[in-house]
Length: 77
Image 1 (cartoon, rainbow, N blue to C red):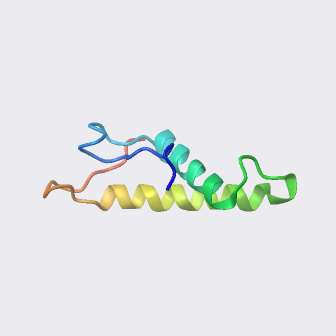
Image 2 (cartoon, rainbow, N blue to C red; image 1 turned 120 degrees about the horizontal axis):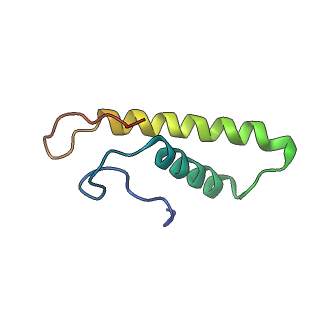
């Protein structure tokens, strides 16, 4: 979907994803879906809530994924 969103799980990324990497991916996703690089002032709050929600869902996904039978990962932070 968006080439600037990088894969945040092994084996593509050897270390655990940081909160900053997860937030950056969430921001890129919300930018792509909304069509806005920076929202107007009247949309800023809803834009930030969306980034927070996507980041939270991403962190949960990464924490619960089992990659090739390995134990569940935990997000660094």
